[in-house]
View 1 (cartoon, one colour):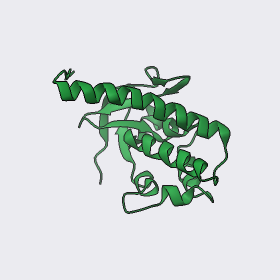
View 2 (cartoon, one colour; view 1 turned 120 degrees about the vertical axis):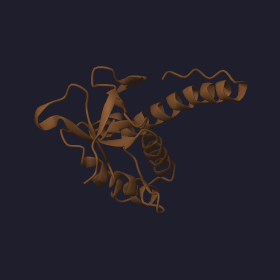
View 3 (cartoon, helix red, strand yellow; view 1 turned 90 degrees about the vertical axis):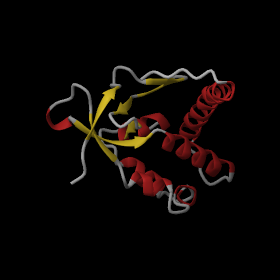
Amino acid sequence: MTKILKAIYGSEKTPLKLGDLEIPCYVLEDGTRVFSGRGLQKAIGYESKSGQWMRSFCNMDGISIYMNAGDDSIINKLSSPIKFQRIDAGGSQSSANGYEVTLLVDICSAIIDANSAGVFKNEAIVHNADIIIRSVAKVGIIALVDEATGRIVRNH
């Protein structure tokens, strides 16, 4: 039986904000940063009570080739969620399926690549993917410079 990790930080009330997008995020007790399945879907522009739509999306004609490449493919990662217990959550919704946060970048890159190849045309989803990639690129370059110059701030 797989251990269910506990979120030690994060909630639906403290989402990551990227442009107009808000994505609930969590830090688990082992340090893993995750989005829920619903959070991933919401980030790219699909609202659902279930976090299962993402797998169907990855297998759609046109985009599937960009989502299913290699052993470390997006679809393989979506098939192996990290079960976690949300802070202050109870009842039937106390646990969620989490996905390591960099998976969102992989998904967005695949969406943009499929759009560039002319095989994926959903403008709203492509727009959200573009917002996410641009937002994380800005934060990423700052973090890389901080690391290279020794200006690393650790909050533990």
